Length: 130
Length: 461
Figure 1 (cartoon, rainbow over the protein chains, first blue to last red):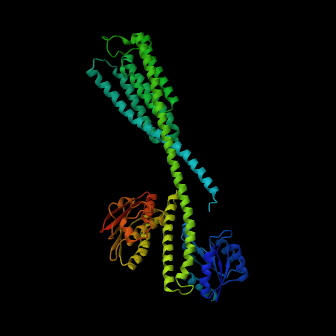
Figure 2: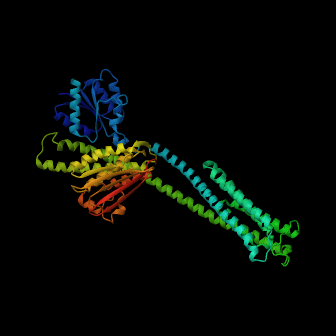
Figure 3: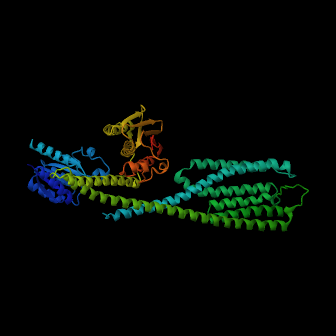
């Protein structure tokens, strides 16, 4: 069983993800915005953080940079959720190849494909354990 | 959602600025066009002068001073040639600044030449002096009222100088009608009469022409303004549609995200009835997402004013597209074939847009071609154009639907019967993209036989 932190400001999407992840046997905690997410990540040291990009206040990019820049939280795997291709018209796959620009471990497009999400979370957990 | 009023304000400022520029430049552009027209007209006038000088003495009992008249015609030709050369060599801003002065100078020289022609061919005896009126009409069309009145005054002064000078004997009189005629030019009453009629005609013409042309200019300006206002309103409407679609999509995506795991059994198993209804709900929300995506796409294209064009390999793009379409075609049991000429070059444009346009057309063909049918993507190019044809053996489009097939949200009758879902935006998006690249899109179709969509896009748009 692994610890997952979901950081997203959309309560409905968070609830759906929580149910799916818990059914899969993960322990899930929730943060409603970037600041809360940073706090919980430091306090709870989850295995994986599922991080939304577009959030009011501190956005997902900033949270990711903050966490990966801190030696205490660097080892936490980050999976970002993005609808960015939709909003800005660029292909996330190519842009995210540069780890300095956006230091994340993986990403999922919105609307979510749950099978893919679960597979990626499992992969990240396995990777961390190794 | 509507918090960026600041951005909106800035945008309005920019639009106003652009409008004031475009207003000025349309007026200047019109003037340039008319000065070109005047230059062309002058060549005809010169030919007319030469023809008159040569033919009139043959048919009428008149005597003409050939030499000075020919010199005036030569001078006219030289100055018109010079103006034509100047107009070709002045470009852009320089041209705009010079054009008014040029138009004034041209008409001034025309009046001078006409005065000389009249003087050397009989002065007041020559009825061609009424041709001065033409120049005042031209001035009234091209120039302001003030400039036209100044030129009319100049015409009155030089014409009066000739007729009074000849009458008083200060100027030599070149008799047109020879020694047999009544010496009209010596009669003070006749010369005075001609003077009054001529001068009043000049000023009345100047007044009438400038009144009409001012009113026309006013009308043209208000039409241009109305057009710009409409375009601006259309843009605001598109922005509104964009915002609303974004908001709708956000909620829809959340609905989909909540329903999806339940329907897939990720939160536990469901009985058959529950599963049935949930599948329907999920399918409908998915359809709506596809629809809103297409709406977002076309609205974004409409709002795009400037595109970042870059050079990309057409061959690579076609390979990429055919890979994804091939697998879809294979899955749906349709044959898909690519016929690409060797050496199709790179093109300048927005790669993702061109890709989007081609995918829309190809997916349409796949959708409306029955199992076992065939879709051919043909890619050719010449030195400056890329030509692409997508031909299918599908159901075709009824002839009366064909003219509207690129209209937003329009779907052909048979397409609606076959497939209830469909946005009616796929081909509109493709058309918009092709037009943004200064290209053309066309469609031919035979009901029950198939459809062929053809694109022509300049390689360097």
